[in-house]
Length: 375
Ligand SMILES: *Cc1c(COP(=O)(O)O)cnc(C)c1O
Image (cartoon, rainbow, N blue to C red):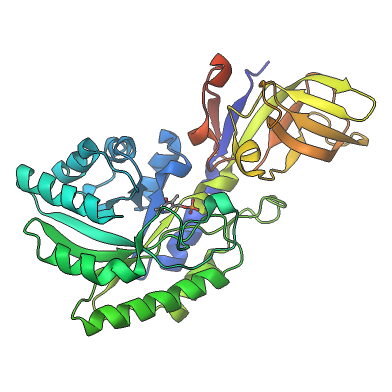
């Protein structure tokens, strides 16, 4: 009997996804893709992602260490985050990573001070809050005025001027990230137009960035993963190609997380009990929100398949975990082939923000992982 719950990764699908990315961007030497490692830092996935020559987008010192340990070149590592601790800034400086994405003036001051005392020059980009609404879930919208991320547009001129005057700072880039699980591409078009305006106005003051980093956020199909296993990379890159006006010599960076790894992962869980009450029928699984928190945290939808009885008669279930929280629910009122004790369920599209967000709440053990080398 398999030891459930566990994450199963389809390496064939991951590689087909990376093939598509390479086909669409590989010929453009100005284009750089960084994998947002917070989506999934499983070393097995990182090994394949590195083979395709992607860089890494990190949001903590731990992730910078993971990137270096996995063998990603420092020159392909970017480091973002609204609250970087001094040791994390030191780590980035000591390893000469490509760029630190700066989110506030006090952070800029600390980077200057740390770089000075380490005898380094810090290459930075300013993360700008472009005030573009991604129209995604409120908890994963990051680019509107009033949320904690980035530098307000009105303060950008001043902070760039200040940074240019600092001895240990090289101002190289402008960084943007408007949110996650974005399926309607219109917000990305708006972002491009906003960046064009920002560049025009900065150029008027004599500043041209060496690179533009447009972040990540491309969404995937959680409702029909079998028929849409690969995200709409073509539409996504076309938006930037057709709308963003890069200046001569300027490089373009992307930070994609979810769209690279979400579909290659499934959470496999065993049904412990089928419990009926007068109103509902519950399938109680051995996986819980500690293994996959997205439904509990964001009300996220994941498709669920009954692997053990795919042709069974359809019935309606709430699929719930064993944790002492009512939000520990994977799906409400799902029509699924009859579920019996011991059946294995697959919770699909769980490769991004699944294993990486797992916890030991209730003193549970972290889920195991297993890989499948399909083609
Ligand atoms: C999380 C994050 C990403 C990746 O977002 P996805 O929606 O997974 O593509 C990119 N850049 C930054 C700064 C992030 O915080």
